[in-house]
Length: 277
Image (cartoon, rainbow, N blue to C red):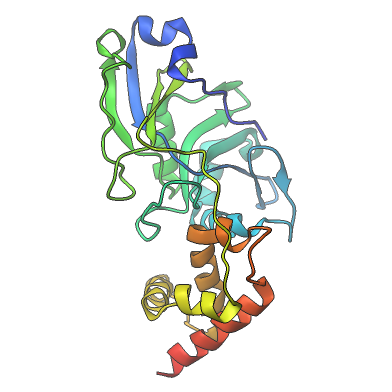
């Protein structure tokens, strides 16, 4: 799979980016690199920014993203659109916690940022990327402004709008043109390089804190909306997945006192009790 394109800070941007033409101003996402492509066999190959994930080898924090793509990608639409589906790599962001506390209930598990077409040996333009993800049943990154004159864009004075994914400011701006030039304008008020604090509690206490009735309600509602039965096993898996999106870095921290097997058992007990009400 093609890697994510390099994206420098705005101070190191290619001169051509701001010398002329028009810009797309998109939201800089505080998530984890994610790539995927559809193979001719119908299998979806997935990976992060460095490696491909094998069967049974998906890191726990990424499970929500892999499931989302497998469930949402319109394979037939992609097969109709290109002769060789494996020639197209989709590059985006898996939206699980890094530093910004997004509203995980309104934030898609995966947001598309780029598409690479190997047959033409190029990344698609931002407008084409937006259309591709929409046609395939997936969402692309939030775009603040389209077709901004590059000569009118001043990275020193530009304001950072509010994020589309929580009630707070965006982590920054992804500034790009249609020729492939791009750069990042970081939000100086948001610190992205933070160290997570490990959880220091028992598995039962962690389950009580995170596997709440409200979370079970939301997970069950989503399952029913997709025509899925709400069984203990399915409710457990989706609830743990939901919890990991927001606190994987604390729950799976090497110094965390919460053992995952015991945590899953405690969540299962609470799921069973919730279903029995």
